[in-house]
Image 1 (cartoon, rainbow, N blue to C red):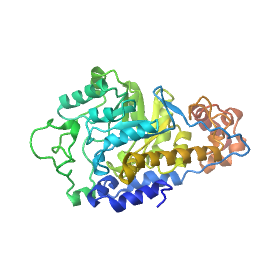
Image 2: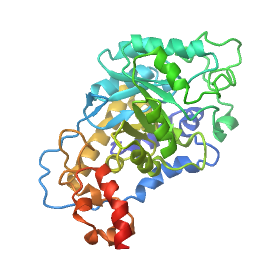
Image 3: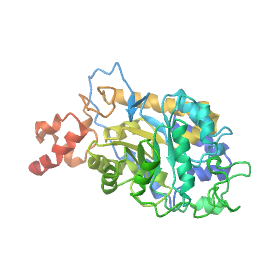
Image 4: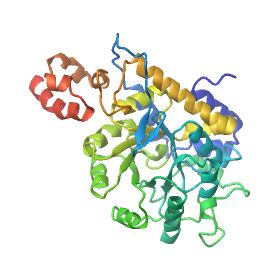
Length: 396
């Protein structure tokens, strides 16, 4: 069977993974409304492509906190990769390295940080952290990650408690006996590991913004906050010295009824005003989805479930196939939309691309020809939005 698009990998994984593993990866919270909305929201966004532009050279490179990657798709932190492939996160690290992109390794990995590092010694990696009630455990993880050459710390902010994932409850989900959360072995007392491989209530629900300062006291790594969905929290992230935000709703696995991440992206980008990099995960299924996210202000997107589908197909090779398909679809979408960019930074300027006009409500499009020059010719998304609201007041 030819694997042509990401849905082919999804179908394969659903067919061949054990049901309990598939249900864990696929699960959303409660009725899965937010999980599904992450995907559906992209279908409501439409391109307004430009024609007769020179698209003979398409450069997909960008930089994350100064480190260049080959295209703006990284691998989001997800747990338990050995449920998808025997080598687990080691295969994930090798695939990311082969494709020259960023891999965010999860606290809930089934391989140790040391094994992940050794699998791809030159790889570009960040480490995702959950803060546990036993703060010494979290402190040791941060210090291990820094010593091993991980280049950033990603704090997950949206999991004070685990969301209710109905299929996991019905299945009585537990890790197989041979599989462990390798980075947390021996960290907790007792034999009850009923909450995704850990004792119940091991996560610290008292974490606040002030704990960013605690993390900053432990490490010199840049800190990225994952799970931001509102302008208020984006502003707090800036105020507390974070270097980046991942707009995320945990793949729809936490609060059901929250916004799709692509819908939340706009207000977060507006709040940040270029003071830090903004990334996004959730719902990316095609290269054109990547382009939509970048045009709305994301620096890069990260994929979660599709990476696991790739592993389930052929391990490292399958994940490379998934990334390669997204890269090629993204490049094609750029060309067909005449979305050419300057300075190898995909959202640094909207130079001669017409992207300012791609994603607006009917109201904006209806009045486009009446908008003043400073809106139509704005050199960046931030400048464009700065002038747009005021201009619309005068034309409506």
